[in-house]
Image 1 (tube, protein in one colour):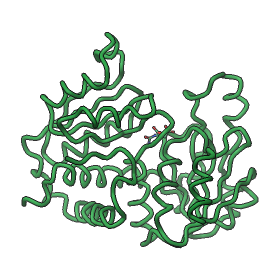
Image 2 (cartoon, protein in one colour; image 1 turned 180 degrees about the vertical axis):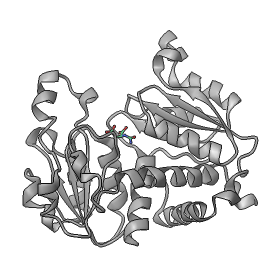
Image 3 (spheres, helix red, strand yellow; image 1 turned 90 degrees about the horizontal axis):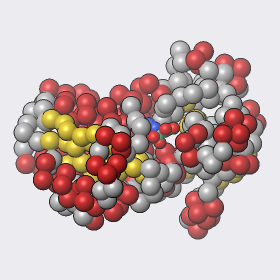
Image 4 (cartoon, protein in one colour; image 1 turned 180 degrees about the horizontal axis):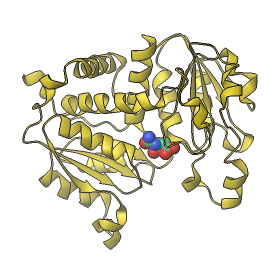
Length: 306
Ligand code: NCD
């Protein structure tokens, strides 16, 4: 049985097949409308989410399946002290596949090791968020036609942003990727990621000002300052508006640069940017549904049968 806990759980060949399937789903959604008839997805969300949970639920409903679950820890037995290991054993009796989000790093790994059904990590603390990464990669592949030979800038909260950590992991396996990390000193990318890039001899640089580098980028990945992972509110307030991508800054960028964002956006992208053809963060949401449909089919081994 397979799970998706870390983006590296799939080889690049497997990812290619997954993205091909997602592209086919986009073209022929009707051919997939009953692939999961009679199947159930459990969404176990111990942390707030709008997009990721609803994206999973939409994906399963689009495939003809149904959905059970909870959307915050307070309304689950976690509030009575139940462990993740016990919860997943119970959920395994109800559902065929589970998407789990948890504030603790490693929770999805624990769940997978006690589960009778495939577990998808829908975000574990500040650690990983592999399905957002699949969404990001599919968006880049669909709109740029390739997943190699890019300069990508990642901007904002690179310390706590799990989508950033997962995306760097995943992109580090493709050729010709150059990273530019744009963050204030306090929110720099973690050392373990820098070490990984050094070991693999992947070029990167760290800068503070977005204006200094935006003109060099093929892709700009903006992120929100992760308020819920800060130890004190003062630091959050000081840093939250450090970057605001507005029209003036976007004018310095290439005509074909793409602006991505995992959402939710707070202030880091001005709404005046939304109409610019380079702003693709709402398209990204749609790709997220296709890729989650493809992932559910792959983990349930459904596309092979039919
Ligand atoms: C991200 C997350 O939960 O890490 N959101 C999402 O799933 N699209 C990003 C964020 O919350 O900033």
